[in-house]
Image (cartoon, rainbow, N blue to C red; front, side, top):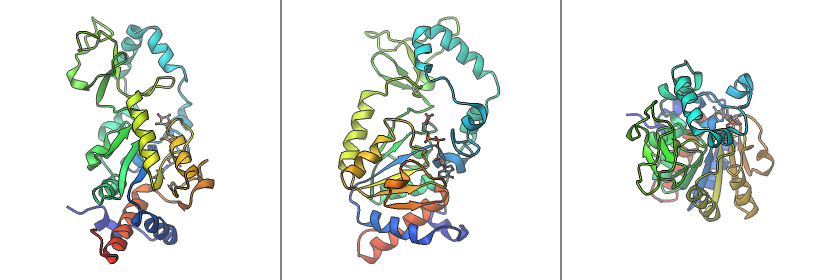
Length: 280
Ligand code: APR
């Protein structure tokens, strides 16, 4: 099987090679790089972004910001509506179902295997990082294949929870709990599981290089982590075809699609480490 870096030759030379080299130079010396990924990572897997050019919400309008409040007010009605919606064709759900990891996902997993990327914080729920081999990962907005109890936080693979339309909402499988279960993906207004927040803060505090990839950096707390890292004097690398609020604090900006830029960056890191006699 070709790795992402083997496919380098196939990428047309439209990339800013100086930026690629500068990013690789920073990462080649990193002991614990941390990355924040957003929807742009999965654009080349066929999943639309939310904002920016051609984004789902750019076209269809943003969803209500009180989604979780609506759920909490009437979980049964919320579940009834979800089951109805699941019967309707849906662009996003269809794209999620068909998506495969792209060379950008594979490159990030390689960067972890090389011992350069210490942790990935992803806002994406599509599971593509895990399928590409990423292990040190926090899915800060959840994962589409999991369900979660809103009371005790226990999570299960989606198919382990029986959704009985005659007995909604589903309840926690932990007998002593009895909390209400929803899909693991975080809605606007929903508290992010405390353990996920602790891990993101701890990893950001340990970072000696920070990557922000394919995110508009407008949703918190995710967008705060690169800022906190820069405040500690950590260099920030931005990989995004468009400008974001983080661009002005980035040490290196790679204005390119992540599926093209990341394999190039990883190949250059591997070359630098080999030249320095370090394990590739
Ligand atoms: N490669 C890299 N970045 C890309 C690409 C690409 N091929 N194509 C687009 N982008 C960039 C866009 O320029 C934009 O900055 O990806 C970003 C996508 O931004 P958003 O759609 O806002 O996605 P994201 O930043 O992940 O949103 C954060 O908002 O609504 C919530 O839960 C949702 O997790 C999401 C969060």
